[in-house]
Image (cartoon, rainbow, N blue to C red; front, side):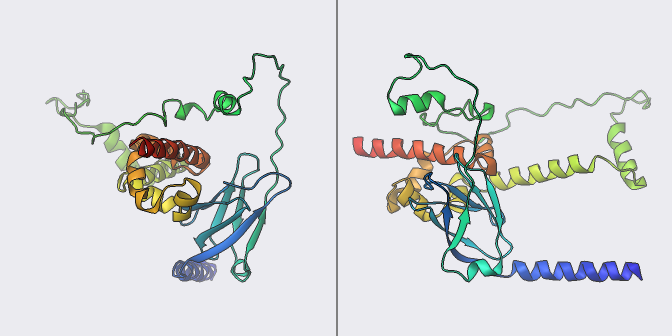
Length: 278
């Protein structure tokens, strides 16, 4: 009886998920509200559909979404927030989401006349630190990348087994793992799930171009209004800002959204500067 009840419950859940997936996403208008601090250029990312948007000077944004989608709002001066959309959020003219100001306690710092230059742009560049994965990425350098082509035959590192008198290279470790799976021995499930998820993410990144990823993540409004790129030059700009897959893999992680926007902003300034010089 209990088994039948569990099967019925599972069927209902799957049916609800299937129905939810067929609901078409529509444009949701919203506004970020906070106390005293500017709400411009905050990232609003739809985790469910992998689409992002950026707020304007009034904190307003628009993004395609549907009920049950999860929005992730992130900004330097605010605590990040996840917001799960409901049917009621689509009944209002403008969804209002309030953020809490991030309070960071800093160690005591002694300010000397040589600590700051007095030039805001120069001082900001001196203190801007993202973390170790981005140390090797320079947005001011234009590089061109070619496909990675294998030039050598892979080396076989298999060790001849002492259990094979004829010297055959049997991989007894792989055979043992296969037998273990057949006999029901459990492996590190969480580690395997994380590995499979990361492999799928990497395959998805490699299957699309840099431009496709940027079009999926940012709305047209971001390129035209925020980066100030002309509509007819967006394609050229994305070719100009292209980066290798290993760097793109880091930038596309949700927690690195601010670094990606900063990279595109820097590239946009360089792109417009070169257009003027031409």
